[in-house]
Image (cartoon, rainbow, N blue to C red):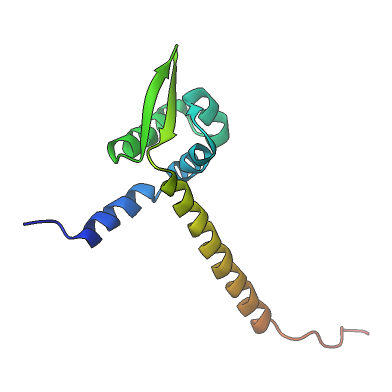
Length: 115
């Protein structure tokens, strides 16, 4: 029995559902990066970064190759960067709507005590 497409999509989004993986993908959407370049940008221990890169590699989201002593990663598809940009736009709109709601919930400024 074939796995429904929506289940594959859910697995794909689960793969993206970690802050370190999102940050790595954001960086790789700009250009290829060696692991040594990613470490200070991501701010985690090398073993943790290696684990997260392995998850992305197994999912087929990134690929790596050796350049001398360095391992360099890149996205498998530029659409991944586009997806992150769309997510950022959606998040910005949601946060703007929530900020407006918070403004609506705040009591109006009245007279200040003693004034």
